[in-house]
Each structure stands twice: as C-alpha cells, then as structure tokens.
Amino acid sequence: MARILTGIQSTGTPHLGNILGAILPAIENAKAKENDSFLFIADLHSLTQIKNPEELRANTYSVAAAWLAFGLDTDKTVFYRQSDVPQCAELAWYLNCFFPYQRLKLAHSFKDKSNRLEDVNAGLFIYPMLMAADILLYDANLVPVGKDQLQHLEMARDVAARVNHKFENVFIVPEPLVRKDSMLIPGTDGEKMSKSKHNTIDIFQDQNSLKKIINKNIITDNIPLEEPKDPNGSTIFKLYQQIASKDQANEMAEQLKKGGYGWGHAKKELLNILNEQFDAPREKFNYFMNNKKELDTILESGAQKAKAVASETLNRVRNAIGY
Ligand code: ATP
Ligand code: MG
Image (cartoon, rainbow, N blue to C red; front, side, top):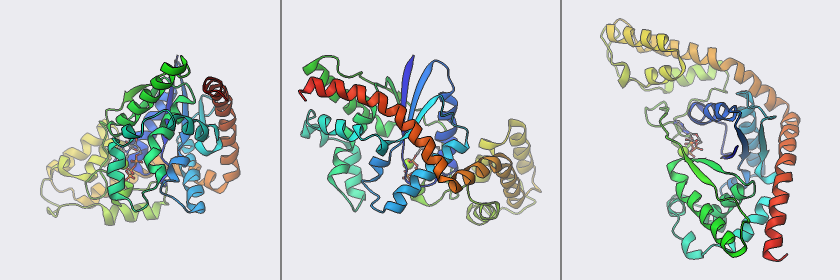
C-alpha cells in the first residue's frame, strides 16, 4: 500500500482548467483501493503571497468547497488544512537546519518568483523545506508533481536522506509521481487557462455570468456562418471536446466542417454542456460556501487524522535530534 500525498494551492476559486486537469483526476485516483491518500490545502504556502486574512480564509473555503463539490470522499482521503497541523511548521524548521543554504539557493522556482513577485520574503526562499515537511511528516511514499515541482521533490528527498544518514531511518524517502500534464485546457484566449492570465472559465459562477464569459470572452475567428470551419483551430471545440461524449464531439466537428454552423451555435452547445455537467457541482459548491461551519467540521476532522500521524513522526524526529 502506497501513501500518496498531494498539496493544493489555495490561491482562488478553482477554474475549469484546475477542475478537469487536477481535481477530477485526483478524485478518481483517490478511489483506488490499494492507495491511502492525504490531500491538503496549502495555506501556509499561500502566506508567502497573501497577507489579507479575509482573502486567505476565503481561498481555503472555496478550494475545499470545490473538491467536496466534485465528490471527494473524505472517509478515504485525509483532507485537511495545512495550517491546522502546526507540526508541519515545526518540522520545517528542523529541516531548514539540516539543509545547506547553498543548495537552497539553486532552486529555479525561487529565482523565477523573485524576478516576478513584489513580496520576496524569506518564506518564499525556504518554501522547498516547508514542502519537504508537508511530505516527510506523513511518511508519504508517492508525491504527484508537475515538472516544475520536480526539483523541490528532489530537495525533499535530499534533506530526508541527510537526516537519515545522520540518525538512521527517521524518514521515508518519497518518490515523485510525475504528472504527464497531457491535458491542457485552453482559456478564453486560446492560451493555457490560468488564473494569472485572466482567461479562466469559472464554472462556479451562476448560469448568466457563465453565459457572458462564453459569449463575450472566448475569441473566435470571423469566418462567415455558411463557410466550413476547422474544429481543431477553435477554442470552443477544444473545450467542448474535453467535456462532451465522443459522439457529441464528433457531431460538432462534422457540423463545423460542413459549414452553415456558426460559432454562436457552437458556443450555445458548449454552454449547454457546461451547465449540464456542472449544475450539480455548482449547487453543492454554493451549499458549502453558505455553510462554512460544515466545511470547518470536515477540515477539522481531517486535521485530527493528520495530526495523529504527524505527532508520531515528529516524536521520532525530536528524539533523534536530541529534544
Ligand atoms: P497560476 O496562474 O497561479 O499558475 P493556475 O490557474 O495555472 O494558477 P495552478 O495553481 O498553477 O493554477 O494549478 C493547479 C492545478 O491545476 C495543477 O495541478 C495544474 O496542473 C492544473 N491546471 C492548471 N491550469 C490547467 C489547465 N489550463 N489545464 C489543465 N490543468 C491545469
Ligand atoms: Mg499554473
């Protein structure tokens, strides 16, 4: 049995790209009987960038509500808020003291972020050690990562090996599970959908707002209605294809190629299928957003389970170090 641990950024309400590319596949994987999964909202990491308490709290709630809206099974997955487990910050400190400063300076992501962001604080610099603590605290065997996070996982393995070398078998050394990132959901401008590019489709908005996003924001060419169109050059079709059945997608492709079928038609079909697929999760999302106490209860119960594991690991570490 492998323990899989996944952290989710809490930088805003998840959009269609996050849902199709990350949330749904992770929920599917968590169903596998042979695995034991830990999933946490990385709100300590968020503090490197978010200094507004309301925003920090609101982001955690909307991320939690989104995962639950898509049916995350919290009996099977330990689902918790990173900040509810203070053991994580404690372990991060110990790890900081076992990792060479010079190696931390080699992190690509810090270089990239320090060029881009205004608030370049020390937390941003030691981020890889907090990430290592997230993983090592729970004896995780496997960590799904994108290519951009691979170096951070190497650092987690490295610091675990350093501590193990000094004190013997304190940590389980985690393995990366490199995501293929095969699914790339385009945004309204045809580029990869990302919060930071402001090209997102937010399916948790009400039907009217969603209609506006689809009708106004998705860019199309101006080939006249009667003429044939290339489905694969179209963002509308690419999005439709990811959500509709194969038959439905083939039908739209045929209509576009035949001509006499305009982008307006295609947008209407896209909107219909979005509503069809996402009305129910949206309702659940809204329910949780209106019942935050329930979200707190769910997250606290996850934190209790997480803390039980965390305390054991931390005892091992404290004993080894000499506390
Ligand atoms: P940012 O603009 O801050 O990078 P984002 O919108 O790209 O934000 P992330 O927090 O980077 O979102 O990604 C969260 C998860 O969603 C990751 O697993 C990522 O691979 C996935 N994801 C994000 N955008 C897409 C997309 N357009 N298509 C498929 N998966 C995506
Ligand atoms: Mg991104």
